[in-house]
Length: 92
Length: 358
Image (cartoon, chains in turn blue, cyan):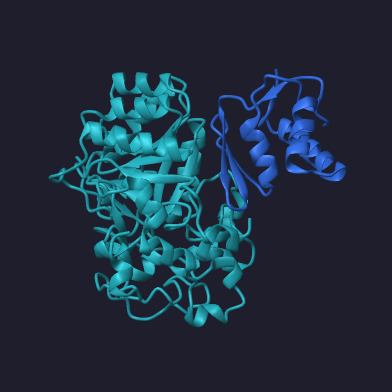
């Protein structure tokens, strides 16, 4: 399911995100699910996601900072949609 | 999940075992930490909280709390509240004997708390010879108390030759309470050394267990039986030895061991009271660095099942007098069979410098 780029998102309190060499780990305390993320960019994005601004705006800024091309930016957005489905990010 | 990715170790443990005291009111025949009485120098409340602070900083996701019987520690609830309030999940193992109404109320009131009650048989006749007279009845009473409060707990059973025939009954007991069954492999650690040969499941039982676990994917194992994945299909879990790589164990006096089944000096990476604390041991211990580089050698390296079992359990090999490069004693191909010398320690292949504290 695609994310709504006009809305703000954040990582809910019951989710913890940790950076690792290969990308990162995500743990959901409520259902004890552990996820392995193999993209450091995705993990860094999650760590910096504060829910203050619309997701599209944050994505654009992040893509510029990291020098992501359109394909990479779209892949990041797709991954966020996947994570929303797993309850790792939540629309505010 | 890529074995090579994880075997190199993580920035912090995903979870760790914290044995909070060696004090125990039972004397289980197979106790992996040979617990009986609290030992001098167990961590104070302040030291324990400082340790939790470190884990919060490192983003350890949850801790598996055991002992000894953790509820014998007077500050147990204070420490668990401190951990939970600071964002670290708690899973604690108990024999259940000290879960009175007040303890049950506290358990039922907390989020992100899991409780495992140990039971090594579905009847007193099977359980009590291992865990002590009356222990079955007292564990069941604890279960009743938690069930009355709607708390879904786990029953943790060490699988043995003697209780294997009650697998279905144990499963039924746990699910009957709305909970889950967790099975653990018997290790020849602690007092387990004395009973390993008499209680370890037979080869045919292990074969049946492999099938049974595949038929019961809701049964938890804590990755105990990954050596059986060599039968062909991976069991659930990470299917690898996580010692010093993704897990570790802190004992009551602050020693940091590679895993809870190797509470022996040769497997300690250091102490949380050392300079650098827990993080210093996890990140800099030569022993842990060695484990992250090490792969089981010998026969296992040429076995076509190596990608499934990775040579089996380090602790079981060590405490049965085998080299860590030997196959697991319960290797499904029989490669690990030789006369077991329980209690004979084979040194790790580490230099004196490597064994120094990091």
